[in-house]
Length: 345
Image 1 (cartoon, rainbow, N blue to C red):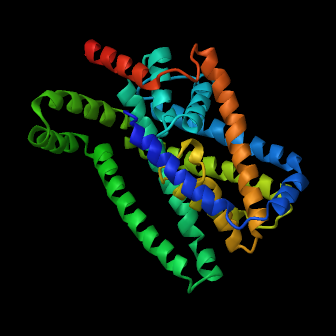
Image 2: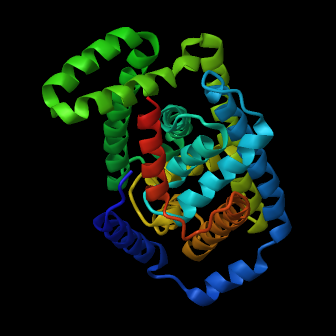
Image 3: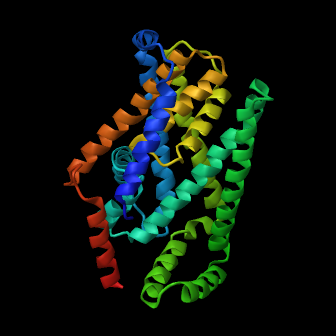
């Protein structure tokens, strides 16, 4: 994964725009009052649910990795935390690649194979997040059925759904028709790519399809889907804890809708940790339920702190224990390990 300067610059620009949207026309004295009055014990309770979700996420990854190598869940948990830290600190969600790098170094799991399992994770996360939004979409329609932004959201949902459907069909082909997929992809590779790249891309694709083997079992697929739903329900527990901390009253289904929309907005490339995009989206969604702008932004800021600091600090501790530092060149390590894989082949 090559991170270029313009990627970083674009992310910073997008974050700046969304931060402006989040903080414009805010009474900062009122915002401070809301933050001061927050009951942080509720946030701590919400964090218990959140880390239960991280543990379930680790369990899900273990299930996906089993065809490649059986690794104890307690051994994978630090790697998952390091991945969160990487996404919050490095640009372009480099934490996902960092997880694969660590597994290659500690357990000799091929990078391309473990990356395949991480892509499957993202696929199931996408299914779950879209479900959270679509199952609760009626709430948005009832709030503002004739608003212009509602029509835009409906249009955007159709576009996102169509793109996601195409991606899902490709994955289903890889899962249940691996030989046919390899034949079609081989035909495309031989006609579209330069000769020197063909064997490399074919090798990566073969390992990628191999990494999806676990999902060829209907039972394992249902287990991964159930665990994905559980991950986001537990994370919704943190949304609930922050709500209680500020004395708000929203149904848990409303919180799941907010969680789903916020995470869809996080697909927009921005600075690490979804700086700006997360804050503006959370504020906007709460304002739809009649929450004052300052209180809605206070909710977003407390939620950001709760989602960012504990898991980032824990991931950084595990990262240092592995012999790295935050100044480690992740891209160089990936390049070196990728070269080793090619030599072994």
